[in-house]
Image (cartoon, rainbow, N blue to C red):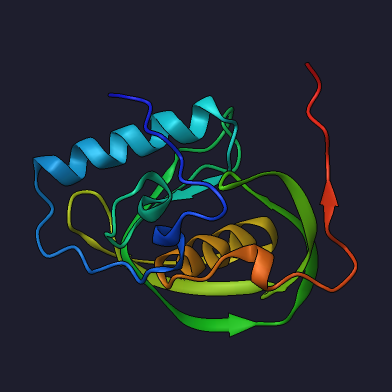
Length: 159
């Protein structure tokens, strides 16, 4: 496993649409492991492959490091959305920037797991937010384009 470089604001790859994974091979398994390690190193909740420079439809999400196993979604597709929630959001590709965004309160997603098994997951609240945020990345969309006007904040990191 390896820590990968996270692509940041201004990198053109973040605006590109990711391609479907045709075959879940060793390269995809290594990518998933590297994404998990990278996300954990930077205390993220989710990471899309495009954020580490790979235009493949792969997402990792880990809400609670202590309790939950990470969620791996390959070729995810949102098949249902319910409700709305206004949430505070940040992104590893936009360090120290935070803003309010409107996201679905509940989403159902179909995807493949890392073993190629078809899965269907319904997420509420923060999981719905994370799934929506990461799938946006796969579609070349970033949270900064969806913020509620006037809510963007830059937090100066402590040294």
